[in-house]
Image (cartoon, rainbow, N blue to C red; front, side, top):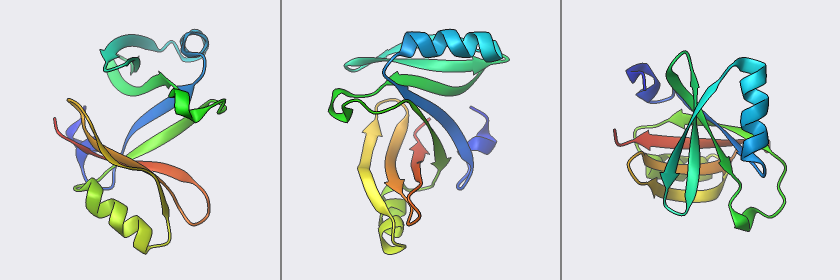
Length: 127
């Protein structure tokens, strides 16, 4: 990942959550000529999206506890400290939906909703 994307406040990753990863891969290959690399992770497979040979995002299946959620893209913003950001979000009137947690080999993230209802994720990279 480009170091500029690891700077505090930068949009750094986009991720599709879907109930049909195979169909999403087929669609985005046809639409954008994206390439994919499946990465085994604990309890799941994560698909890294590549454009021009660079990692630009990911695709994953909704976790079982999500029920029948519609497919949705989400954005990650790099922060220096996810836990501090989560505290600031709550102070500013936002709502934490996934509290800060680690992604082994990647970093730490959280998902929150701003006061207007939009969802976004914050991430601090360990690499």
